[in-house]
Length: 229
Image (cartoon, rainbow, N blue to C red):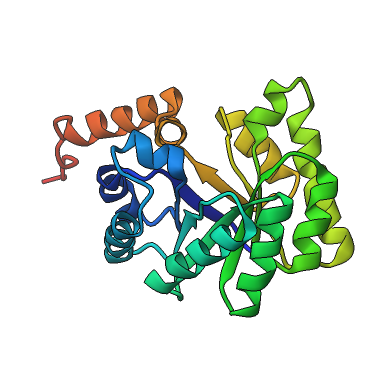
């Protein structure tokens, strides 16, 4: 496996600003992000978003199914995958209904991301089903008073221990230290909100050094060395 970064946004303007950078493997969305972007959770709007993301070079687009029951998730997941089977991963909650729908979609060749992972033992479900991704919510685990970093690292150990191909897609990162700490522990797949991406590229000392180099480049030349006559 190798590093994969995903832009966590349903805002096409943010996609246009960041996807051409080459940093991101794709984008992740959910109904909350769609609402923030002023978009409905509807197949038509997600189809338009998928076309936009594809045009901008996204290799994967993670779209969340809705409906609440296994049958509803399954039907919605089929519609979502039908938009672009080569690029879309259907997101489903790691519940009984979500897991049943995931198993049925996998039989059709649909790629699946199980979300809302909060405990390392849940990764056994993801591994048993053979899904592509399982997404723990780091920030929310920490908000519950638990050691989110230790829990996510334990999730990766479960996947490695059973030899599963599941990627642990870490979501809800709050600061850059989350990213570096988990990457150093062997995690390779992250979804990042725009503020965190901006912070990654706006380290004050890096900016100061870059400005210093630019100033030096614009400074008057000292001239050619004096040649003997």
